[in-house]
Image (tube, rainbow, N blue to C red; front, side, top):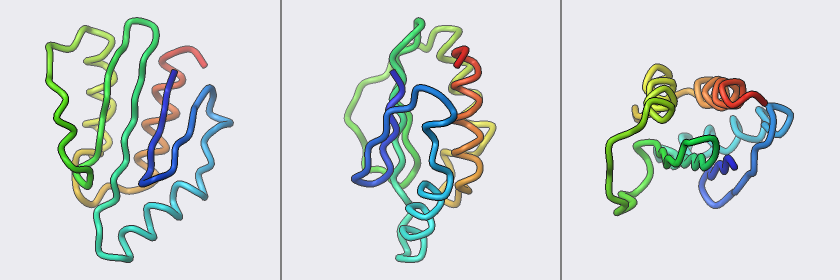
Length: 107
């Protein structure tokens, strides 16, 4: 299961067809236009991966940390390579990340 949260909006992603690129870009642009770093969260729970990711615009989750396994490390690397931890991340980088994770999971 992959869940994507953009502000108050929640999406379940089963394939790349579930990614509405225009809608995601619009939500992120709207937050940035309001002077806010958008909060985007991604939760992945499948195939040996149990990970929660969030952008810098999200309040601290209070969830503890543990050592990532090899699959989770690959997902964390994909997140970092696309600068999704940075305040000014681009919507295209989020979309690229989501597509890459889905492909990695064989979807």
